[in-house]
Image (cartoon, rainbow, N blue to C red):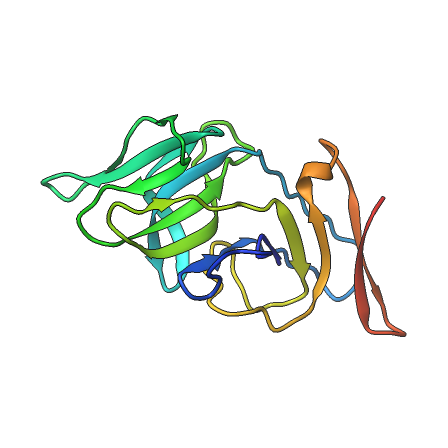
Length: 190
């Protein structure tokens, strides 16, 4: 499982990491998997089914230093305003009630909706959500999560790898290996 769960303020209280990638490998043999992302942040009004974010009723991409406002019209449809430059970048909850919001990254497929990586429950009315998003990706060996699943508590298996993606070249290859003598997994750059 790959997720962004490092140094999140209020983690497991009102902000939750989301399983970004859940990749299954067989017990033996060679396998490959591809994980691609773009470094562009989006906010979305998540649709959640059984603890898994299955989509967003509305979303918007924002640039650095920009803010958007979430509103709800008289027919209960949600909208995000056009992002504008702001002293406090992020997303303002312009709705009269607390709202759940997801933060996502652009998918590698142009025009596709963002892939959720953080979930915030009950963002207060008029509050500005300014997630200090950390592009440190972590890998865990676990079968307990599905892609898009909201991680409600600390992952029980240890982190086998973490890497700040800002330092990553545009294209890299990593190898996941298992040492039967130690029972340890390793993820190494090739």
